[in-house]
Image 1 (cartoon, rainbow, N blue to C red):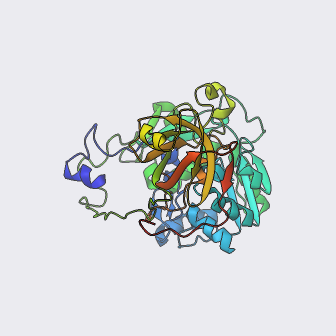
Image 2 (image 1 turned 90 degrees about the vertical axis):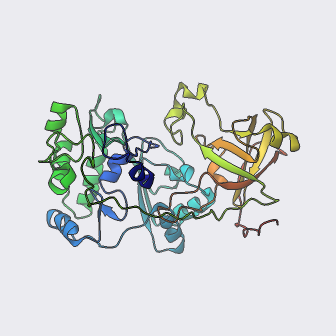
Image 3 (image 1 turned 30 degrees about the vertical axis):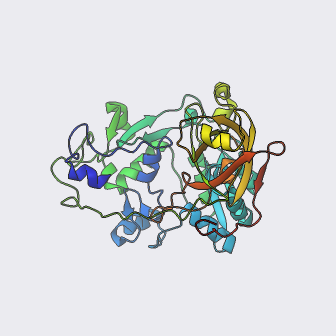
Length: 389
């Protein structure tokens, strides 16, 4: 997409550019702050000694120059015993991540599992320690959207638990021997500005004054930068990156002739931990399997039938919905309800560069269910058959 934007001169002007629509709020904000395992805040690689030096002097502790692990690699490492503890905040990986059996094996193998969320979700059931989370209505800080716009988030009530999430984390750090302390969230923002060049001009005082600001926000752009790359790129000329197509390892066969793709629906948010507890269930009370009329007819499936959905790694059952939204050979379902566990059937294949799970391509078979709805994880993943088998 970046190559196309540069080739067609759609960079550096108002109304153009590449703007990904994120799946959750503040994805950009968390990435800005170094949530990638290979980067520190401001998208600076951990291998850069000059960057590590900033934080080592401020925090008084060494930072490893090697990147950390991405989530799928964490699971593999947990199973082989080299990754032993995990702290999960605001996430339900036991429901949202692919190949549920593989995920649960990893979570069961951990020596310590700490979960900090609003509700007891599927992941929290594996926790050794459960810490209370807070909702966005109780948070004080910032959210940053896809256009780099930093927005103030102000609480409408004090945390029902008595503490903000960051306060709990700071107290854990102190108990472990590190003197982490902030009097307020504005002090955290000040530390971000002190250590991250693109945020050097950002403060709660500025955001309260101007409403919001788009980074870079610094001495060269005191109120932010609405459009980037207007005259040149930060690193000189634009660099085209050849991207070779890498086909999926997943293959449809006679046994698994259909392709399953999963996604979301408007009325439910991600794994539904919050929205399933509201009247939104009126619009989407269960995951259903949308199947093309042709695929349904050859399998003797009628609208509303309970069907079995099986892949190489697992099996579940859910209600069928005849639909022509997908082409012949493709079926679709959502993953908002744990009772059907859509990710029981998705595989652990992921993108080679980012390890983003391959939710959109899973070879499956669909048939009329023999009994009541069930969710089953295959005991051992069978080898991938060769084409035509």
